[in-house]
Amino acid sequence: MKPTILIVDDDEEIRSQLRWALTEDYDVYEADDRPSARTAFTQNKPLVTLLDLGLPPQPAEPDEGFAALNDLLGLDRTAKIIMVTGQGERINALRTVGEGAFDFLSKPVDMDELKIILKRAVHVAQLEREYRQLQQAVASDAFEGMIGIGPRMQAVFSTIRKLGGTDAPVLILGESGTGKEVTALAIHRQSLRCNGPFIPINCGAIPETLLESELFGYEKGAFTGAHTQRKGRIESANGGTLFLDEIGELPVALQVKLLRFLQEQTIERIGGRTSHVVDTRIITATNADLKKALAENLFREDLYYRIAVVVLQLPPLRRRPEDIPTLARTFLRKYATEAKRPNLTFSQATLRLLQQHSWPGNVRELENRIKRAVVMAEGRYVTAADLELTLEAAVQVRRTLKDVREAAERQAVLAALKRNKWRIAPAASDLDVSRPTIYELMEKLNIQKPEADDDAS
Image 1 (cartoon, rainbow, N blue to C red):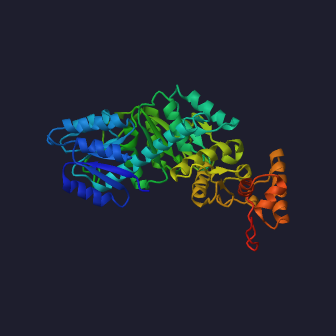
Image 2: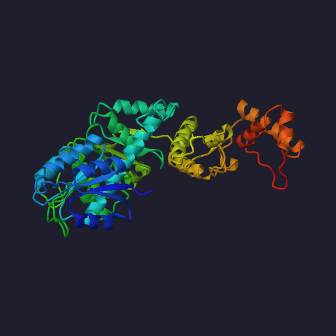
Image 3: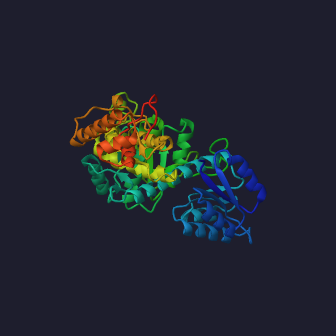
């Protein structure tokens, strides 16, 4: 499904232009005044709202726009609202951010700039929404939306709690899919900056030519196309946290500028000569070997020791198999509910197979496999085939008492079915159970009738 956005503007032509430019990537809803904006916002629950500051009945004044902003934030305090203002309304634009807007744009809207801001706002909104859903679903087993009952994750949670009262830079290490961004968000929410912005950037996903302006911003006229002054992400995170994912991909030239900011807590926008004091906490993450990058002079040693005041290592999923059943049930509950199949469940055999798998893609792989299984499952139980897992792909572990009991149960049911030529009623009689119980056991134990046998009961 495409992310939903709401456009609030009294100019039908502007709404049409925005809808035409954005409809390929987003489900677009529209409103032309404050009352219709409230209605559309309540009904459609958009991830991001584009809100014009000048709305009827007095479109030349900002009062109605500020009232609409307060209305929408009153409905959802985490709403991501991008204000659209006139060229001469910079003071009002800054005021909207102070009152809770995610960002602002000046008219006429630069579509490329809008798409970048929209993409970032949607990403943050989705991250926060998933965080809240996980918090609600597994409150007893979760810490800040992170699930882990075993000693390795409890140690991670303990470290995050200790970081709550400090602004020390944190370097999060972990394989792809272990939850580095969710961990950074948890650190932010535990900190004294929790009411400030959380701004994530993937240093490896933005072209090097754009990354400097994204981080440090630029002054009007700094380069071709710089029609207005623009804050960078470091400055936008003032009072909050900037999360730099894949920090190992940061070009050496930008490493120098980032180091200067960490030392002096000031930045200069591109094309500017004025230093700006910025109170932003930096959290970084990588799945690369930074020690190797240091040896190869691809990463500055002085920057490494600045960002790695506290190093938090996230364990891969294969190292915490005790957490897999809880994670699996959480993801199954989430996606089965979305698919209107709330009765889907795992057999014990399938849960053990999940614990035996090596999970090279970690938590992200587990979530994606379960998402697929909800679509593919035909009965009440999610099977190994639904998850595209085989015993050969799993790491062999010793058999528990439950393994032995289930193997014996499977053997007894199979023997009774074969003895009675796969007729359900006689097999049930032999085992002194009901016919529905036989069907349930066949599904639970993944016993399938051979195609060559005739059905009889």
